[in-house]
Each structure stands twice: as structure tokens, then as C-alpha cells.
Length: 294
Length: 213
Image (cartoon, rainbow over all chains, first blue to last red; front, side):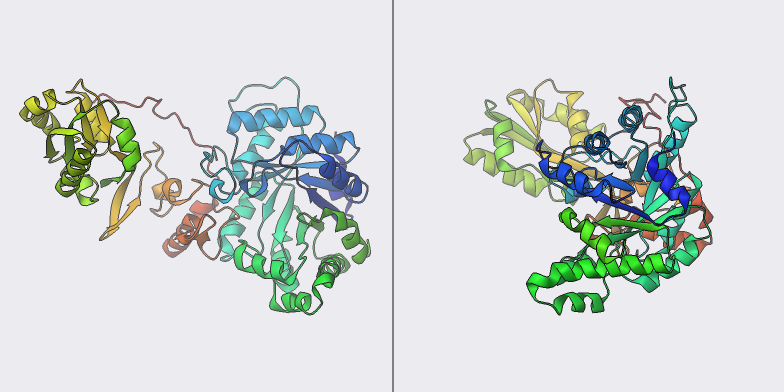
């Protein structure tokens, strides 16, 4: 059965996804609140997978919660913590519970997280995980054995349009397309001109691209991201714009900027949709959508 | 090629030697001499340190190369002093410990941790070059090993953590895939980077790995 998210991608509409982060622990109150807030406003909700290598409630668990509440989950799956057997098994479990959208990621490095002495697995990489999904869909596992019961997934990946140098990233992007990525959610983009150039290139491939919108909630955060987060570039005029308002109004300014960016992407049909990452401020995602006129 | 080691903490060494009061110390004249972790000087310092702890050092030696058959000769030469010791404290790399284990029944306690096998790129700069993975990709990666040079050992291109040619785990470290890209481009062989690399076989030689020639 084709997922609701896949249907949205294929419909030609401007697709909106957002994401929620599971808690460290079993108190799901906040997670469920965020799910309830988003589920009827977006076409899919990503659930992060131990983001930044910090151990949390699992992505699959968050996806189950979304299903239970009638939302449409996109399961983020990194290759950092599971070998190929565990990844395949979790995909089978996901499919059995009607979780059929998967975002395939390599995963952050172990030492950036909170279990610094753990073994980084990386038995597969993001490309090989995409290909594994295709193999499972064909009815076989990676051992070449037949599966009892078919699976079908809408599989996607990420791309970083601001990476420097960009060429190695584009080669990997094309390899991801070749092994069957159907959609891409990009790393945060702030520089529309640069993103426009990326899209002119990306349009030659038959994939859907959702631009990553990260809410810059303060000038300090924007500056930190541009200086420290790989693949994120925030133009100085945006940092200045955030800094131009009093501290208590910065969040509202960040929402305005995010909304404005989304509106511009949609108006000129630059890409196929957006993926909104509010990073801890999920409750303002509806405000971002309002600011975007959606 | 050198075996890179670092000395264990004095506390850990002391704990390992609990109940072992008579100690014979073995250093190595090759790798651990070069890395200043187990040469004559460090063996002498260790002797002094152990004596301060109240241990009796029955003797010491620095085998010219502790991982080959010189070790057997050395063990025979020092039979008496080793015989009167409760254990050997090894200041060679783990390969030396394994070698000594062939000839000595007494406990052999490593004073060093063996970190990796390195090549010396420039004087004093040692880099892990080969993880002995059994599936050499160097012909397709412009001679730069993605298994050892990429933090995640990725074989299909860079991850999203690369930033201005550096690695997400350390801003001082080069991103292996940026280097591979640049070198393949210079060689006019970028098509190699476009090739899909399937998941690796981690059992080319099943563990425990051994071969008879």
C-alpha cells in the first residue's frame, strides 16, 4: 500500500514535513504533544534516531506513537548503531506496523554524542541501506534469502546543498538517486540563491526535494550554526536581521524568516516542499506554517 | 611500519602487579624504543618506579625486536632472572607479549597499550595506514584508505559531517573523502567515486584470523 506521504509526494503539491525528537527516558508526554500539534498540519513527521549520537527513546518507538495517533511517520534510520541484521529486522517490524517511510542516514559520529566510548557500527552506509530497502522490497534479504511476506517502503535520504566542497556531496547524491532514493530532505538552507542553483542541478533527476528549514531562534544560534554545524551557512544579513530586534522578539523574527523562506520556495516552485526542523521548539511549527501562508 | 603504543597509567600497572612482587622487565629495541614507551630509558625508569613501590626487579632486558625469534634467544639468555621472578612486565607492544607467551609460562603483564600499526609520513608523524581489512580499495580511492582515514570507515563517499574538507569529529582532521575526491580528480579518475561499493565482507578470513603458508 502506498503511504500517505508517498501519495503527497506524487500528487505534485507542495509537501510539508516536520520532525519530532524522542525523549531521553520513557516520559513521552512532550513527544505526544508535539505529534498531536503536527499530525494534521504536515504530510509526514520525521522521528530522529539518537540525533547527535545521544541515546534516546528509539525512532521506531516514536513512529509507532505517531501511527497510534493517526499521523504519518517518517522513520529516520542511521547506520551508526545497528549492523545489517538489526537494520533489516527493524525494517520488517516497521513495515508490519504500517511504518513505511524511511529516511536513510549514515549517522553522526559516536564521539559527538553522550556515549563517547561506544562502538560506531557503520556495517552499512546510507547508500547501502537504501539499496537494502530495495532488496527487501524485491523479496530478499541481504543474505540472499527469500522473505515470507513482502515489504514496500518509500525511501529517502539527505543532501547538503551548502557543503564545501560541494562536488563530493553531489556525487554521493547521484549515487543515492541511482540506488533508489525517492525523496531528499536537505540540510538547513538559508541562502536562497545558492539553493536555487542546487535545484537547477537537482531537477535533472527524478526525485522529490524537500528543502530543510531550521528555525533560527536567536542571532546567537544562527551564528553558532554557521560557524560550527557542518553544511549550514547562514548569510550575515540574516544574522543581522535577527540581532536587530530585542532579545524577546528574536523567536518571532526567526519564525518570520522561516515562514518567508518557505513562502518564497513555494511561490517560485523552487523545490517540491520543505522539511521544518524546529529543534526543541516544535510548538511553534504551526506559527511557521502560518507565517508562510500555509 | 611501526606498532604505536602508549604506557598504561601507573595505577593500572600497579593493580596488574598485585600479588606479583618479583618482576622481570622486557623492553623492545624497535617500535617502543622509537615511540619512547619501552626503550632502555623507559625500562630503567620503570625499574626505579617498581622499586619505589616495593617490588623486587630480578632483571631486565631490551630485546632488539620483541615480535620475532630474537625473543626466544633473549628468554633463554635471561632464564635465571626470569625464573626467579613472579612475572614479566612487558614494555613491548602486544605482539611482543604474544611472542613471549610462546616461551614463558609465567604471567606476562603488558605495561603498554597497543594502539595501531602506523607508517611514518614525515619525521615523527605516525598515521594508521592499513586496518588489514582484507578487501583493499586503494586502487579505487587514489591510494587513500577510507577504512582508516575516514572516522566512520565509509566506502561510498563522504557523510554529511564533512565541513570545508575537515571531519566532524576533529576540525584538525582532513575529511578522507575530500582528499580522495581531489586526488581522483587530479588523476582524471572520478568515475571510480561514482561506483557503488557493496557492503563489505567482514569475514574474508574468518576470526580468529590465521593462515598457514
